[in-house]
Amino acid sequence: MIYWKIFLAFFIPGIVGYGGGPASIPLVENEVVDRYHWMSVSDFSEMLAMANALPGPIATKMAGYIGYQQGGILGSMVGVFATVAPSLLLMIVLLSILNKFKDSPRVKKMTALIRPTIAVLLGIMAFSFFHTSYQDAGIWQTIFLIAASFLLLEKWKVHPAFVIMGALAYGAVFLG
Image 1 (tube, helix red, strand yellow):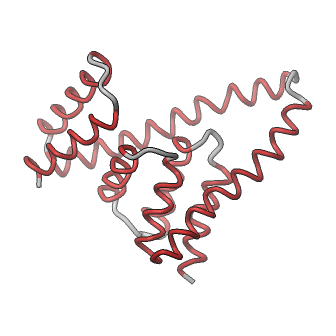
Image 2: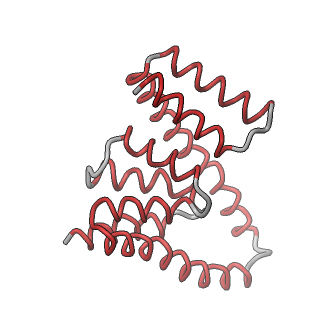
């Protein structure tokens, strides 16, 4: 039964997560944190940070990790398959349809409306992570990490993987 739950937890976000890995992150979080209670928000954010530091698609890394955590190697394989298969099939079908109607005003409007929706979902998730960080680490630690991350990413153009590893190291030393 656990393999069916793993399959559904990643198949559903794979189907409705239009926009790739970043768009499916809040959907996966909803499944594994709220629906199945496999992780807390804090555990999910730590797993997400580690997954972002590694190369490759974020959705498959999350599926592999969470699938392995819940069902071992077979659970990992089920999670990755459930993540990849619906996206591949749906993209083939949707791209053939969109290609036929690419000049349609309705298709252009639909595509334009999807971007703000994804931005809102990512904003909600970021607020949730901020709230958890504020409760667990305190306001000054949270403000410091936000400011340091912003400066490293925007001003000094440090690669996000190094910023994430630095934040993890900071958390291990000062917050662990």
